[in-house]
Image (tube, rainbow, N blue to C red):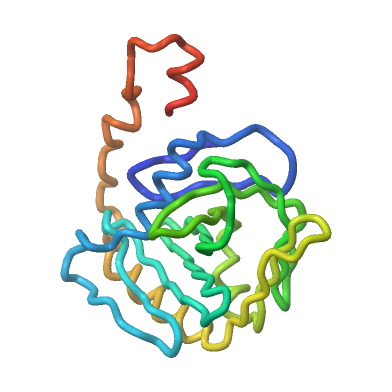
Length: 210
């Protein structure tokens, strides 16, 4: 799996397959949840129950919604300038371990993603998971009324998506603020994506940290 750290993008497999680089996968997700350092080209705004904000690396934007009690689940969808996306769902009651590899079934009103891989994360005082879908996923979510997630026979969450169409339209406008003009050179890959955290570690340990 080719996952770049600078642009928060990752590709999840629809079923069993090679394990992704967890460090890059999780760090990319955390970029979505921290917009404090984002520039002033786009100001966060509310669209119904959703909030659209720029990503902290200015390589895309994300929308988020926190649902009411008792579960108070948070849903976030990040969209990058190259079309990559990631879905994050967080809940303070969950016991998911960070970097835990999960296989779950995702179902929208108009699409299904069985046995889809997600990775456990912990952020904002909550635990949850992050995953990614194909480039058509934001359009599918915009046209859907609900998102159901199951882990085998156990329901994980059932979230209403009312207002998601208008929210995703605004999300795309936000992303357009950061998209480079056609023909503009792409930024060089960050050195931290190439250089291991501990170059003196044993090969197995070093690989696990990338």
